[in-house]
Image 1 (cartoon, rainbow, N blue to C red):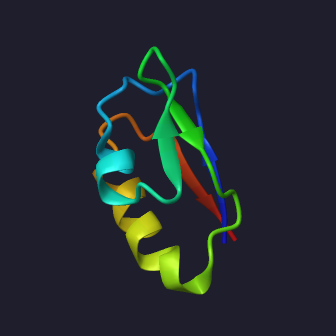
Image 2 (cartoon, rainbow, N blue to C red):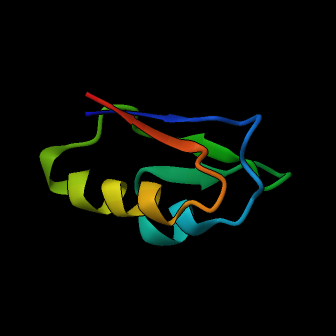
Amino acid sequence: MHVEGDRDVCVGAGMCVLTAPEVFDQDDEGIVMVLHKEPSADEESVVRQAATLCPSGAVKLLS
């Protein structure tokens, strides 16, 4: 799995950080930052949940 955060689409809701803080963070303006673009197998389910919860669709999962 590969994770991307679309900083142009992000609205700063922070759901990704609340759901998977080991993979996501926010910059000083609240915009998504991906800390681990290739999450471990153990992190995949929470990363999928973070993508589902993202209200703007800024979290993108690629195979």
